[in-house]
Length: 198
Image 1: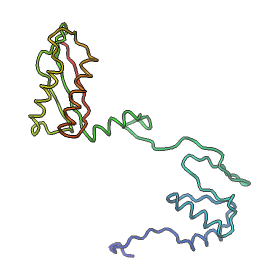
Image 2 (image 1 turned 60 degrees about the horizontal axis):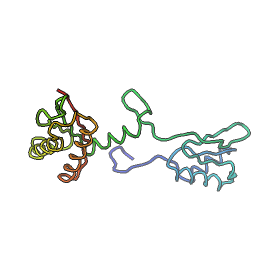
Image 3 (image 1 turned 30 degrees about the horizontal axis):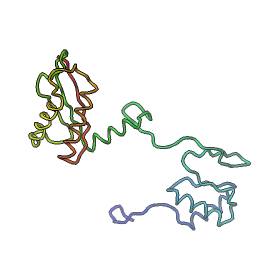
Image 4 (image 1 turned 30 degrees about the vertical axis):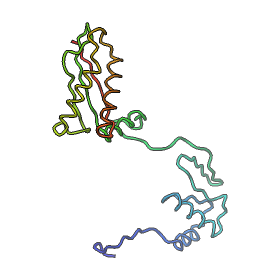
């Protein structure tokens, strides 16, 4: 076909061509290596249909260890296999938590809440600042962001009778904003509170 013809030609051999090749080569052992699993399986059955013993045909799964010498061929075991993730300069060491966080960030974005508290009283020294990336457009959602700031300020208002406790602030801010943002947008951005003691 010419390069401009709107026809896709895969270039793989037909069953009859595969049979011809098997009859010419006459392998003692046979292991198909190209295609999806169903292609491999059909190719092995094709080899069996022209007389290759079933015990001498092998369709491997990912991770199978295949040993071959002049006298025998066999699957001798299995090793761990699967996807290998490349992250910058490192290969294969991306944990599930990192992947989960990246999926969450790509889907719902992030909201950073900066809270300044008096280091002695634990009282807010002003309204929290909120920065959003990938969640909502700050300019189009000014009202929601302002309400968010007020909600955080009210949630943390304790009259200065409690020292600045990071665990309490972190949990309170996340719980308050997660509920509010879900009610408003049906999305769950990653909420990261930062406390600055002044």
